[in-house]
Length: 531
Image 1 (cartoon, one colour):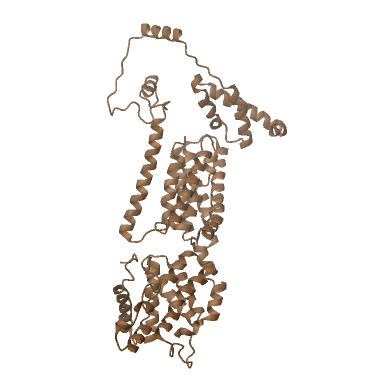
Image 2: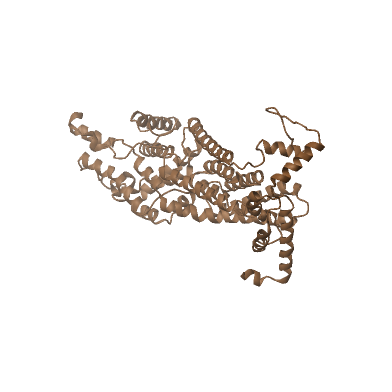
């Protein structure tokens, strides 16, 4: 009512004229009483794109009450007409066999064709059981496709996706999928512009930032198909959603910069606009304003998708302990408080960690693992040494007495082993992502401190039964991912090379082989998806 009072006379005249035009269109065809509600629901699709949303709503409100049934069934008159038709026209029987076409694409549908289609239940049957079965079949097909794809992927690459072994990640992915799908089923039906405004690509950007590009593209395809299913313009909406989502995800990449999100917004808007131009212009005569409106909706969809995905991925990562590229880059800056503390307390270990990070990152990139995650995990893997820095050789001044020299081997081993637990405690204190905790816990696995163990054996006269080997074993766990396994190998190689100073490449290769073989024989790589 407030809008009606505030509208100008010029716009009111336009609204009146459009309402009459819409009413004329609605009443042009026969309307039976059981079809009345369906016709009223379709009125919004008859309103011109030149009107605003508020004016469209006003046109619908004005025209809907006047839509009435104009076709009434009379048994007597119908019977009389049928009898007259039978008397005037010789009976014609048309039969169809299974597999026969009733009408071809592009052919004008005659009354007989329409009757045949209706009799065979091909013109929007009142019983929607078939539609429900179709929707269920599509859901089952999507589930089967997803399961088979990721199963075959793991068999081929031997590398599971980040969320596969993470229950929280799977639950989050399912909730996001259902949230966007439910929103689509509420917002899209019986609207003209809203389907093009709805930010479906935001889901793909969010999943890509949290779980990787591959997951983002696969689940975006599924969401687009289910969201567009059953819509009047499903064949136009599906490529609109898919192309916009895919282009946005490809431009976003690993989401390492905020600028990547801005680029994704431009890509979504551009791809969606191109899709509209390619799909709409060949079938549009004069409604250029309508096309411009849809292009504006595409631009809005790109901006809205990025505006949703950028803060959402940050908040979800913080509250659920997930890891994103932006988060990893932020905590790997030299001015991050824990790294500053690390450098001040244990500068030798800090330099060692940087060298290990360089080695592990290059190896990760060679096997297409997560190089950024590997690098950042390697930087923080030894932060526990800051608790007792002088007990580690890389932090001991050249002329100072070895801190382990006069210690009992078991106590010396306990001090060294303790750096894993100390590191985990620091990681929790500084709220490092939980994924980085794995690098701290797994970089030594369940190996033993060989130097201290050999010293204990020597003190026991070589009698191994007098030495409890478990006192010299790290309390972590063997690596469970490619990234942590690479860290274990790089850490061992760097330490051996620093201690032995190989003179040529052959000696260096021998050290690398020795480190790998020792950890293989110790069973440290059995749970890591390495080949």
